[in-house]
Structures are given as structure tokens and as C-alpha cells.
Length: 81
Image 1: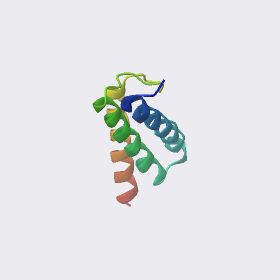
Image 2: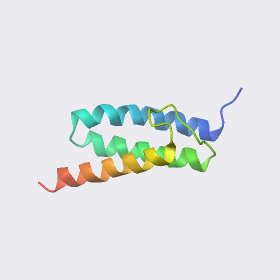
Image 3: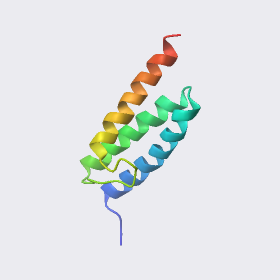
Image 4: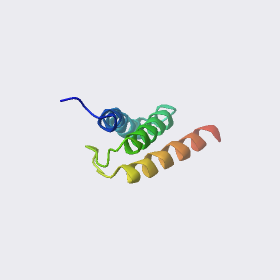
């Protein structure tokens, strides 16, 4: 059975979700990039019909808000120095 576009994008988003979680611990530029990609690919997954995820929070709109905020705040903290 072939995956839908939403399932493909959610799969990519899930990978970035894992990266963003690890990067949350590691810090520096990895975190804003990974978190931003995570949010972007969850938006794409939702646009293409995906309404759930394997990520721990399970709700893509919440993940978009969370990782979008993490990307913004972490980039601001890095650049303000």
C-alpha cells in the first residue's frame, strides 16, 4: 500500500521531531534549524491531510506551535549575544 502525501510528510516531520528533542538538550544552531524544520513539515503533513502523528504530543497543531516557538526563542537567544 502506497503512503499518502500526508503520511510521507508526517514521517519526515517525525524524524525532525526526534532531532529537535535531542537538540533541545544539545543547544546552539542545531535546535532552531531542527525545530523549524519540524514545524514546517508538520504544517505540510496537515495541509496534505495528516491529522495525527507518532510524536509524543500526538497533535500536529500543538507540535507546530511548540517547535515554532522553540525555533524562534532559541534563535533569538543565540543571536542576541
